[in-house]
Structure formats: structure tokens, C-alpha cells
Length: 499
Ligand code: NAD
Image (cartoon, rainbow, N blue to C red; front, top):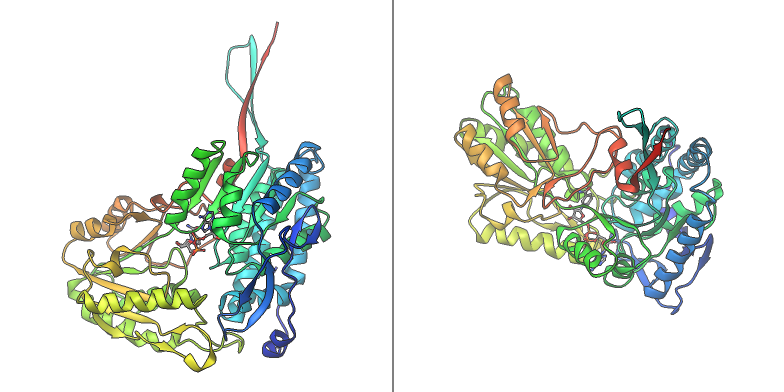
């Protein structure tokens, strides 16, 4: 589905770009009821790209009412799955057809390199929508093995109105992970994108409507988390929240549900994933290049970034040399050139957070072996070098807390038991990786690691067909795969007496 792109003058296209920052409710663009906006600033150069509607409780209420009307009258929910499939496949095609525009908006809005927006974000979002479209008319319900005197049908029904609240690191992909399964199963959605990256969500909704999605089924309310996000999560007529974001806000989502209508809350939260390299692994250079690629991709702003690297003593010096040699390949550059391996951090606040953690690493006694500085300050944007600390202990803040920037912490260990204990000593449990050629050790460790996904001798594999989500404070529920249907459907049992 990923079609080749002709070379583009992205800087010129960026200069001419004038995004529409109004809300999309009930099939139409409109300003926030109070008329307020906020400035959407590009982290590439600090330029204001658009004024975006600052949606608040009144706007959320309008969007939820529109979604509820659409759900209740069955304009989407009652359509046969094969019809929903057709519309969503058209939606996926429209995403691909608009790939240049969407990629540019994504890069301008959150700072990632344009070739990544084009080659990863746009096609992944389209594939996700298409995959759920294709799946939904192939899933059957069940009949329970009961006595002959009755029939028990176990069916799945759409939940109703879904509030989707998503972060800024992969704005389109995170939206698609909610939209795909929620829309395919017949729900209506109110999407609240991050205030740091609101632009592509608005275009996605327009494209969905162009593809034939009935009005009111997919609404977008932009705005701040503590205003629009909170109002959505507290709304009495929202049936479920599909949330991706920080563990701090995930906690609030559970509180909001408790304070309102006990809506279902599916949290996909932060991570501090352990990457464990044993000394029997015979290609340390490959382990080092893999961890650098995964850690520094997306400026380190990935929930599953392998930010805690555990290396067995005997190969630790070799590993540090190898990973340090990788670092120059990830120096940040202008995200619009098409060749920068790393772009800008999302905003000034994130820049200060990351630099603060680098300071904490120094203060707590870790040894900086690469990077550590802000760069490209003249651009007006927010760029930090790929950074590696050696001699980290698992009690340091840079090992315990999610930095969400290009900072890798290397922790040395002696035994397998120690490695497992350190890896599991974290409030998070999103992903982990084990590097060993000993089959028993690889399996044993993979089983012992408390994480939603464990990789063995790799870290890059990913596919819409597999579930994504975490143990512990990395969340509950799973995005992607057929398991995501569980989040957006209610299970119903219907007993029928047979005389
Ligand atoms: P965040 O929690 O600050 O914000 C996420 C979303 O929640 C945004 O739309 C924001 O506006 C909204 N929000 C903020 N405060 C709110 C409130 N009080 N009430 C309601 N909504 C509120 O997270 P972020 O900084 O946007 O994203 C980074 C986080 O997302 C990281 O922790 C990262 O690990 C996590 N993440 C997790 C996954 C996953 O699948 N597990 C994927 C991507 C990102």
C-alpha cells in the first residue's frame, strides 16, 4: 500500500501550508463555542503553524450528542459489516492518497523527520484502518455448548460512544489504533488529539467523511487535556475511553470514570523497557545497532523505546564502544530535508524535561559516554543529541522514570538472576528484549520478564496482527490485532428456550 513518493520541496510546501484548526463535529467544521483558540507551534523552528480551536466542555458535549445520535439511529452501527468494510477501505485509500499532506502536517506539528512520517506514520495508519475493515466481516459470534432445551447465543455488540484520547508522539498511528477497531465494530467516536499535535486528526476525520462515513460517527474536538480531555472522560454519555498517554493521566482517567458513569477505561501508558544483552550473544555490534535504532527512532519519543539497556559485565565495554559508534548516525537535523535521522523534540517543555534528566544523570553519578547537549539552537527548534549514559544503577532517576527523549541508560549486571530482577524492578512493563544464543536462557528469561511484549534477539518486529500493550503501570487492554475488538464491544448472552 506504500506507494513511492516523488521528491518534494518540503520547506516550500511547509511555508505555504495553512491548516484549518477548527473542530469537526456532526460532519462540519466549526469554531469552539467560546471562540477560543491556541497557537499550534512547530518544534522545528518555533513558528506558529495554525490557530487551533480550544474545545471545552460545551464542545465535547456537542460532539458526544452528535456521536450518540449517530449511534442510536443506526446510520453506521446497523450497517452490515461488509458495508462498513467498504467505507473503511475507502478511508484507508484516502489516507494514502493524501500521504504528502498528512506527512507534512505530522512533521510540522511534532518534529519527526518527513521521511518517517511518509514511510511509517501514514502507511501504518492506513494499514491499521484497512486491516480492521478487512477483519470485521470475518469474525463470527458463538453458540455455547449448553443442554438441548435452550440455545445460548454469545454475541458482540458495539459499545456506543467511544472517547479516544491520544498523545503526540505518533498522532496518526495512535488515532488509527483506536479508530480502526472502534469504527469497524459500529461505534461512534469522539477523538481528542493532543494539544501538541492536533492537525492530522482533523484531516483524518474529513477524509473519513469523504470516504462515506456518515456524519456524527467520527468527531474531533481539539483542546487541552485538562479541559477537553477531562470533559470527555467525565461525560456521562461516553461508554468507553480508549486512552494512550502517560501513566499520570491514565490514573486520572480511572478516577474520571469512577466519578462519572463507570465507563470502561482502556489505558495504554508509559514504559521503561529493558533490553538485556547476555555475554553469550556473539554479535554485540548487531545488538548495539538494534538498540540505537530503536532508542533514537522518533527522537526517543516512543513508549516502547528500549531506554534501560542491561549488559552483562564481560561484554559491557565492547557494547559501550559499539553503541557509541552508532550515535553519530542519529545526529538530529532539519526534519524537512528528507535525510535527517532524528528530528526535533515536540516542544520547549519536552526539551527542558530531557535536558533536566541529562543533568540528573550527571548528578546521580552516571557516566556520559555520548551526546548530552542541545543542538541546532539557532533554528529556533528543540533538538537534543542522542545520548548514552554508562554506569547507571536501576535506582537512578534516568533508569526509573520515563524520559521520552533520546537518552539511553546502560546498566551492567553479573548473573541471569540479577538481570531478570533489575529488568522487572520497574513500575512499567510495556516491552523487553533478551539477547542470547542459549535457547534455554532465552526462553527462561523471556518467560520471566513482566512485559506485554518480549523480543528475542531483535527489537524491530511489529505488525498490526499482534497485540500491543503493557503489564503493570504500562496499562491494560491491548491495541492492535483482533484482541482490540474486545475493547470496543460488549459481550451479550441471549438465552432462547427450545420446547
Ligand atoms: P499525556 O498523558 O500528557 O497526554 C495524552 C493525552 O491526554 C493528550 O491528548 C492530552 O491532552 C490528554 N490529557 C492530558 N491531561 C489530561 C487530563 N487531565 N484529562 C484528560 N486528558 C488529558 O501524554 P503525552 O505526553 O501526550 O504522551 C506521551 C506518553 O504517552 C508517554 O508516557 C508514552 O509512553 C505514552 N504512550 C504510550 C503508548 C502505548 O501504546 N502504551 C503509545 C504512545 C505513547
